[in-house]
Image: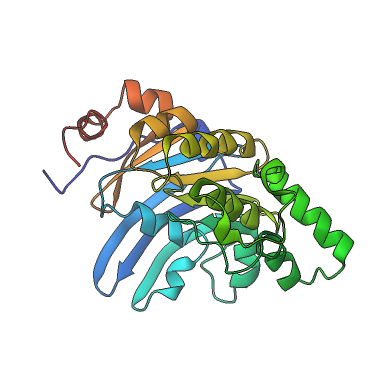
Amino acid sequence: MEATLTAPHVLQEAMVEKNFRTENLSIFYGTYEAVKGISLPFPEKTVTALIGPSGCGKSTFLRSLNRMNDEISGSTTKGSIWIDGVDINASGTDVIKLRQKIGMVWQKPNPFYKSIYDNIAFGPRYHGVKGKKALDEIVESSLRRAALWDEVKDRLKDSALALSGGQQQRLCIARALSVNPQILLLDEPASALDPVSTGKIEELIKELKEELRIVIVTHNMQQAARISDYTAYFYLGQLIEYGLTEKVFTNPENSMTQEYIMGRFG
């Protein structure tokens, strides 16, 4: 497979999106360039799926969007990530406030060793919410938004670890929503779940995109086709193709995209 790749197709109408986008973003681990000069927009009220073989840079790219790569020793970033006219890669960025604005849910459910209630209340408390009434409202609202309230409303004091895997993942989504993010990053959120739980997560994603932007890494081509509005195909740290999901899946411009979607490699 050639390492020199053709330039990706980028939709003209998507590139006018100024509120959230990357610009010539590169990420290094030591001298290794894991992500190579990627410019990508994230239109409002949409789901953008990042697809590609393992090790292609999509999770590294995702983590960069709320500066989580800062936590990795030897990681450096070049280029810009623009949110509301501000480059979050600039020095002086308040990373805590940034991660309040851009929530993240990981591949495996990771509830805190606390009650269901305290998992959701943790973030608001950290950001200064103290009153019980206010916290009660946030907990209920977050669980409702994550389509979990009816299943847990009578057991809020129970350990979050007593929930099923699918419920735990929705709890983690509710925990992210509790601080009212503008953007939600999902790193293969259903890969460890059964088909029924996966379906619930997918329905939840479709509902949540009406109020925020969602960026999801997934290895599941059917999932990307079902839930995303835009798809970006990564290979060897490069963005190979980007466009409306329907077009990328039915009429890709790059032959490598077609080969991957059809399961011929990766």
